[in-house]
Length: 640
Image (cartoon, rainbow, N blue to C red; front, side, top):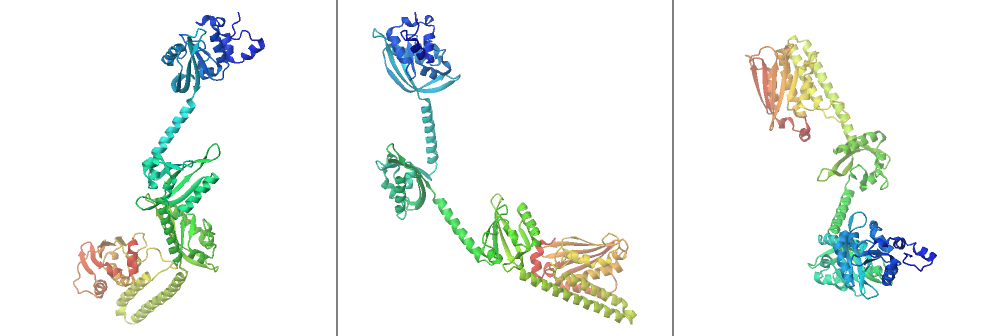
């Protein structure tokens, strides 16, 4: 007996039908072991219903009898996933155990003759090796036999999982967007229905246009929003809206609105018209952002930039600026006037071309050091003038830092010091010549003294002392003579310790040991104080060489300085010399000269202590007497 669902079909027709794998499965299935029995024993109504279902393209499944035996088509087989083909012909409660209760109820309702629809029914099914939530539309109807009684349930399945998940994702996205927009009063959304001319918006957009928020949610005519736009901007905005609608292009505009307090606020509004199936613009959604603060900041920045450029261009100095990496991106008008270069031609590393070739490497080295360390930049170099002449220039720059200390920009200046430098060179030449002549006068004086003493042997000692004092004056003069970049004198000259070291050179021996040593606080001295200090130390050293520590081979002198407010305390202490005692005879000329230098010229105090291990002289000198020159006072803070 043929077991085919289509017993009367020709062989070629049956072969064509069985190209459907589920029809072939049904024909080949051993129904003799199934409660439904073999196919020829099925009722005609059941066979007819199964034939209709098997050739349908819509997923369909039958739950036949009280056991709900599963018979389904190929579309449902794909829906069943990995559960197919094992569940074919199986009771529904066993085939889908995870939804047994759900199917039990459906079997019962179908056998009761009910028809019903379940939309977006969520079921957790194990179709691909793991339980997963699925959604579907289910259309149930009873299977009716020849006797008019239900014999099972037919279910048409439309899976909606993708649509439901998409809608849920969209809903979550819209919720997050709504929450994000609600958290800021600066962003609002709107949707204009052009057919009804009604605009619906969120609370933020309504507040921007001074529209009642409840009315805005329900929708109000667009004219109510246009009332809030500044009258100067309204014609432009209206024209831009019409252009966007006619062309179907994006709308983007910045304009002012007047809020409830009467304040004008700037908005950046954008949107895109949407067309319906007929090609007609029917919706116009968009978003508005309050940019008032940004607009004010931009205006303030533009005003500040204008003021800076105006100030920079009116200054006589050349002003420039760079990025943190040293890239030059700004020069004022003076720079281009001085160099004669075209605007923009010296940006970046182009500025190096206007340096004198002999100064380029040195200038780059100093600039790189400042960029690496953040230290202020200062250097003198020669720049090419628009006349072709190279002129000396003082370059200086300071970094601008943020709150964390990071360099944001460098601002620098170039000052033309060519004439000042040339004048300084001329003054230096004059000073050198004048110093040379003064020293010649000192030499003539010592020569005259020597010649005068030759015929008066009793005056020889006095002559020697006078020559030494004149020598000390000469050393003091040469020590404080103004020096410039042409001078070859060592750095540090001009301090008290350096003057002492220079005066004491005649008393040093061939060994490496220094016989007169200075320690403690030091200070810069000017020309007014150098002369009395030179005479003071000369007389103390002369006496030490004759009677004190410098007379002994191992003797030495320690000079200590201590700054105390507006005074400098000096101690001259001799060590390693013969025992000393206060002199019995009245003070000689040398002692009077010391008193005159300290008390008379420098308004200081002096005290001699004849200690057993060597003479000690305590001096208290006002700082004002050492630094009467304002130039030296200003630079004293940088002294060692």
